[in-house]
Amino acid sequence: MLYRLRLNGKNTDQYMGITETTWTDAPAASNGTEVEHNGVVYTIVGTNQKVDHIWWKKDGVLYWVSNTLSYLVSKEDLLAVAESMITIPAP
Image 1 (spheres, rainbow, N blue to C red):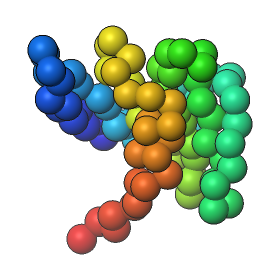
Image 2 (cartoon, helix red, strand yellow; image 1 turned 45 degrees about the vertical axis):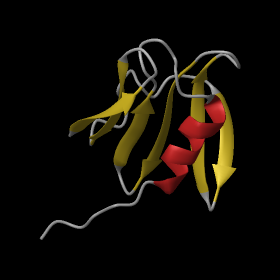
Image 3 (spheres, rainbow, N blue to C red; image 1 turned 90 degrees about the vertical axis):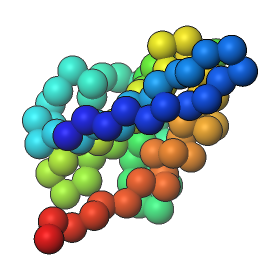
């Protein structure tokens, strides 16, 4: 699944993505800096100035949150989004 969130900026709207797939070896699962939080390892892809996305695997699913095209979201805020994600069980 792919979701896009609209962020209202001062001059333009920006979009941030949230994606999940059972393809756990997808190209999004690229090398980066690993950070562990509550037993989950998050991988930060990009530089300290421009984080592209943060990915993690849980229960056989690959998840990632993507920054805006202009890298509007800071590394700290993007990591907070990733860490706050919860799995919603199917009905």
